[in-house]
Amino acid sequence: MSERDGAAGRGWIIDVDGCLVRTVRTGGAGGVPIDGAAEFLDELERRGEPYIVCTNASELTPGEYAQNLRALGLPVRDEHFATAGSAMADYLAAHHGTGPVLAVGSPGLRRTLRERGLELVAPADWAQAAAVAVGAAPGYVSAEMSGAALAVEDGAPLYTAVADPWFHGGHAKSAAISAVVAAGIGWAGGVTPTVLGKPSAALGQTLADAMAVAPTDVVVVGDARAEVDLARAMGGRVCLVLSGATTAAQAAATAEADPRVRVFPTIAELHTDLVNDRAPSKSSR
Image (cartoon, rainbow, N blue to C red; front, side, top):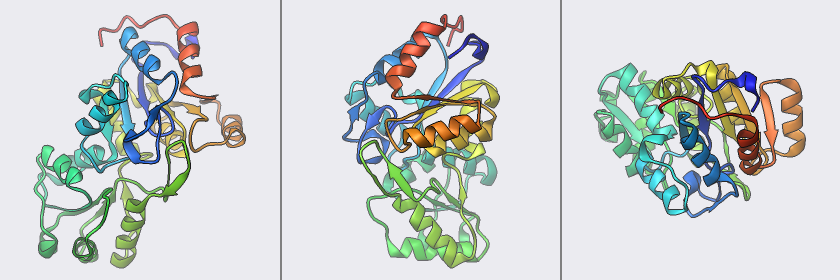
């Protein structure tokens, strides 16, 4: 990064899959750390620069995902981790009070919603739902999807953690099933789901607020189009790494079209660039 980027007030949003970890499962589970990932996080800590590691996964709570990364040797504290599920929960708590919410997804998604003080409603009681929230799960229950579609048709807003139909963790892409489920519920209910994970501006604002920095002072680090679009939605900058979903040709075209995009082969090169080009922040964070 260059001196003009300035340390004062800057924050970082860092992707997991294909950026910090190569994996075939969301949230870094069962993966292998990418060279330089731990060193990059350590450098941000040394500099006192605020950062949040953020995944579009929502099957587990943020603390559970952070624990998975620590088990892989990545120094991520619970308070430095956010998920599409936790961002969705924060948005619902702010815009729909305490609920009730009809959740379609895993027990971990429900735990995340409850941790934010939200009341959950059973699928059979879909008429009481103030909103429908769709997240990841290893499998889906037809009664939940039916109740969600009925609630949406009846006027409840439909939110999804993910809108991108594909997941890429640095090995190969696979279908993002939660996005497919949300699209199906929306199709049945006659609406388009509102995405609250990456690249939504709502998630960006939530994370910028958590770091106490302006959205325009955020640098997003990731391997996919979602991170580029998130940075653009925030008015921030992006460091695009080639260790996951984006090819070198795609990255070059993206950087040519947008001067706020910088491209690095992996996070190891970004770490080297940061160490060589910047003095540590005086922030106490």
